[in-house]
Image 1 (cartoon, helix red, strand yellow):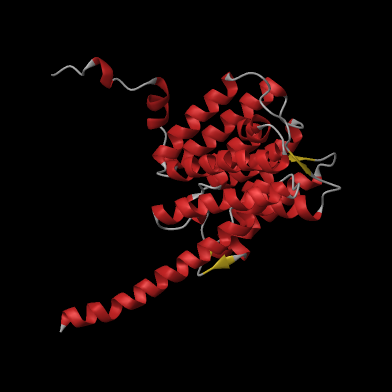
Image 2 (cartoon, helix red, strand yellow):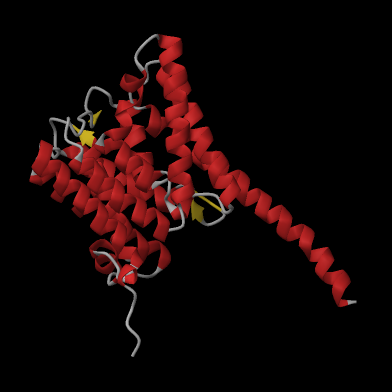
Length: 284
């Protein structure tokens, strides 16, 4: 047997994730974000909130999938939505964690176009309550502090998963757009560039760039389209941030994502219809 060259040996991260079916890789990754953020900076409100969020999300997924689709759906996606809610939401009450998780999953089954849901579930639930119930819920606002290690760990894992999911171009486009518009905003507002770009290093944005905007179920069908949409999300967020909207990234995805998704589906339908006559001509 031939020996493998020294450089071909997979690293620890690759070997670890290569043994896990890919549908379970994002849940493992978001759990790592959760543990890293909590044990480093106390990111979680309490263990009750995470159990409530995840439990309600999974229960809603299982019940609705059985009632509407006639089958038990894998709860991996609901697990991600539940953890996202528990990380990104702050409230003195417990009920918002349950209600937001339930509403997030319900949006997958109620708000559909051509049989597909058009919003990223957690983005829908979180955005809705941040906008309509600001006195009851708030968003995560902590940073990783001055320690680069947690951020580097999350970015390495996140980039690895984005490559596996073939969505790295979305993350990179959004990050490039965010940096560009941060610079423009620093010129317009008169603040420092690093002050404007700093939120990108926080745990809220880690979830946003690696989970929400890259969600395969709610992104458009072409690579070029996904790049354009990611840049538009960064652009709309820039406008919102100029108007002092704290939760600009959530709102920008909430508006741009579904519109782009519906336009993309209509273009696919038009393309499919136009190809029918061509097929008919070829058969005669």
